[in-house]
Length: 404
Ligand code: HEM
Image (cartoon, rainbow, N blue to C red; front, side, top):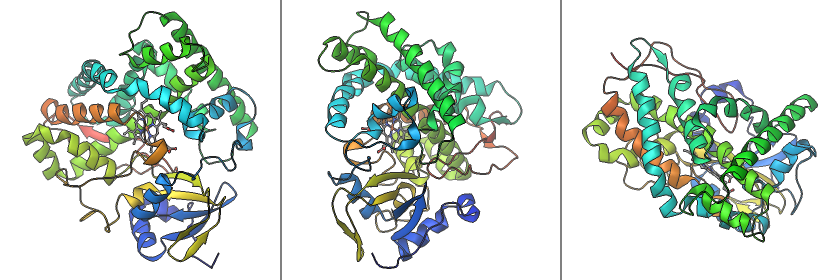
């Protein structure tokens, strides 16, 4: 490989204001070199390159077929990792994904809409009770997605807080960072908690759900005996919780942040609630909840004059690709009426977000109701700083005043 630009993912200037660096990389170093978790890595930031890797069937999530990272240990957290769809390649991934897809069939998603709407409307109404600045993240964005995830799995909504508490511990094995022995012990304990908690729910619901229900459809596959083991079923369901909670929390927070910073767009939405689904896609493009995903090259590849040999670890800059001016007109402008919006916030190809249909009804309902229930909502007085996680940057808090 020739000498190419380097990218420092720990640079504090980059972490506090990412988009200028993304633009510079797209324009001047679409293929750059970096190190992630001790691994030499090639980073791609243009839309066409990121999209091409997602859609290349030989691109893998595992370093070598069947090989898992050492940092996951060999306990319950490791079992969770080894049976989770995002960590699997074909053929295991293909089989599990086909079965899990039944949870988000057209009929299953239509059946979800009424209870999703009930949870979101109640959450927004709770905000209207405050007459001072409140933190949108802790008062809404952490609670509502957790309640939706609990309801999806038939867990009592009142358990949302308890269920959530263990999530950061489990997430430690899913990221790209080293996990020290102490954190691995916590991750194992969290994984075991989820196996027991979801396992009990599954056993209590056998024979009681229709196949229109997300969990009912998966239970049928498991009861068939030959399609899905109990471990796979439980881990797929825990995976729904993990995959849906954090992304939705961040997407809802980013949506409020972006719309209130661009008041004309908020007013446009208030005047035409049918723009809500487009507005959701636009906020996902504008500030994508997942900034980076990774893949290993499954064959020799070639980008902008650079050879990327088979086995190369590649970091795919989704949030940078979603602001690529080669694809999106005025990419740094939030435009809820954007005509063509084939963003990559849900990824693409074989691992395309399985829960995207649920996310889309959540976004439609949330952005339809937000200006109706809280027409006066404004940003509060404190301006938040972005979190520093490379792949999943979040606003830890977002002060808003809903009643001004
Ligand atoms: C705005 C909200 C969401 C965003 C931005 C999002 C984003 C993503 C992305 C980027 C991936 C690809 C991961 C990879 O390739 O490694 C993914 C996968 C996945 N998502 Fe979502 N997601 C969202 C909501 C949800 C919801 C509500 C669910 C519901 C359970 C869900 C379930 C999943 C599952 C199961 C996968 C794994 C698919 C696979 O590996 O085949 N997501 N999501």
